[in-house]
Image (tube, rainbow, N blue to C red; front, side):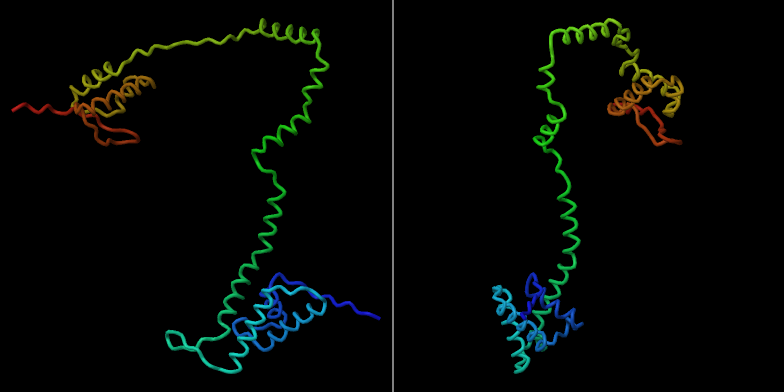
Length: 249
């Protein structure tokens, strides 16, 4: 009778170390190096017995574990800049924590990758034209085309054109306002009151085009320093005030 032994395969040495830590519920910040080194080497020994090639990264980590174990057995404390003792396991723990952090998001990234692979990229013109050619075979339609069918189509188009009554018409409207005309209008109005709210200009003739021309005229007068504007009461309202001319000296 023969027995077949199956060993789980791990993505890397840190994956194997995390497996031992989680299996035995060990404290990752206080790893028992002797035990975890024994388990790690035992796993590599089984791989060699099964004639499975051991990756160099596993051998490197095994050597690192044995080095840490020897430092702990023969204590020769190393001190940092502050004079505190350096834990030989510190570098290993740092790599394990980083690996654990990235491993925690691998499953989520795998799902996102699978979802992305199911989508079709936009802008694939060649693929779209190929699909359209399958749906509408233009060449087969032309094969069934004859002069009679062309004449029937032409007849229907001409009949539709003759029955069309809503012809397009273009009308050019000449507005009875100019900027110069509205400038004189504004100056004339404020010559009596000195200042006037913009709302009164609108009330004079509530026409959109009239209001636009009047507003543009006020802006030009403002640029010419003939009037000034001040914030008034109400929404979107302001006072238009005539500037007094300064006599020449």
